[in-house]
Image 1 (cartoon, chains in turn yellow, purple):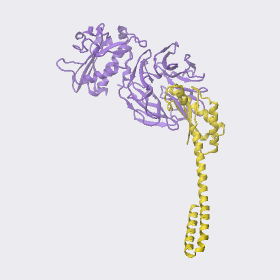
Image 2 (tube, rainbow over the protein chains, first blue to last red; image 1 turned 90 degrees about the vertical axis):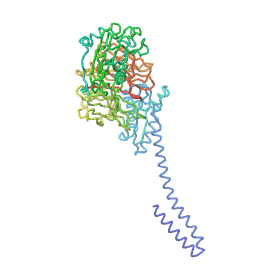
Image 3 (cartoon, each protein chain N blue to C red; image 1 turned 120 degrees about the vertical axis):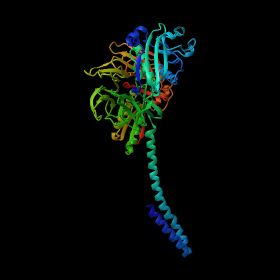
Image 4 (spheres, one colour; image 1 turned 60 degrees about the vertical axis):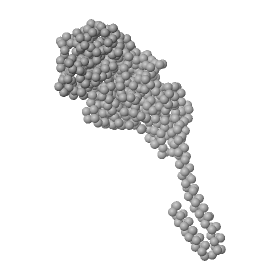
Length: 174
Length: 442
């Protein structure tokens, strides 16, 4: 498409150049035509880019929403809180809108438990989120879970405020 | 390696009797049962030349260092430094009649070790003796001939093993090997091995990601571990004899614990899309052969005694993690921890009589030891910080656990009766998941 437009513009330019050399009267008429055609062609190109860009932007925003919003749990628990269900419902809608997205759900724990048990607990936390998304209509084949237990804390202070940030599910689009 | 030098001789027939564990323990009347109590004060005298006309060989200082390294990990032993002995620790000779025990008695030393060395062919002859200071009785006497420089650590291990055997009935700790996991950077944990006295530190894996939960096969050939990669768990197996690592996916997604049966079969706590249960795998590791423990939520951390008669594991089937044992013959399960709301990381003694585990207390996790027959519990660690993942040494007496009491997770040695935990040198960095392997062959 682009090459056709370029050819058209080049032909027009040649006509204009030739016209300019032939008669002055025609010079007035021809320049009027050039921007109209050129603008029309330009608009077509611009319109396509904008649409793709808008789509890309929306997709990125959806991806950001899916990955940036984590859900959190109480100590030694893997039940979803009400606010977590709201967050997951939003993710489910986005996943249904963008069927190309596949999501890895990572389950994490705070440091107060013990390593192996926390790997089990992290898996439960990841799995409960996965099951919620499936119930919301997301195909299970697009979801994957992994548990890191207490291996990957986001906060290392020994306070409840910090521990509460580590008891979480993270979501990665792949 | 051992063939390069040999145990030369016991110094006297009397020493043979002294080395018999039961007799020695009775004669010494040393009670090492109780945390922080009955600490034995021991002094290692400055090494001497066996030939008074010659200075001590160059190997003397190095050998002394190895001996001190060995003795330094024993929780019930306090090494008295040279400057606390009236007149220092340089003796007139290494045998009883050449020693003024009064000097050591004044400094409240219970046991005195003497070391004598002399050139012996291409190596060194080493004589080690341990005396009871109060009576002057010779407790241990060993001589090693033609010890090469590279075998100095081994000679120190043998001498200290003989001493420990006289005290406790078993000196195997000095030829034990530990596997553990070490943090090498963000999200990177690799498997290492080391001897409890901190020697022969060696990196096993270089896989990136996290390699955790190492367990040894009973024959010592294989070390299995769980690997956490960017998006999945997999099983890793190190073949020690070929120094090769094999990795494979398991039927389940999440691996939360591993164990070997006495028949070298792998048991894994894992989950698929169903529950997290404990399974015996087929020998090819591809399928589940048998479900060993199952529940509605988390079943994890399987551990066996040496004969595979009992399996301990963690289950939160009653709402919080507690420890259960399964009789492998009948399949009967019973809960064994009732105190505390969070009991985990079990370890069975080789004879299956004792269970070590971590209990969460308000001040942090602490290690307890439970007598499975009577149900009697004993707290053996007291923090600070978080003490977890105990593992029994092959002798069933020593316990190694991980603790962040220093601010960083490190490994410590204590006994099943408690005692001041001693740091196991692991070369820096946070370390986790200690697992005793079979004894090193001599």
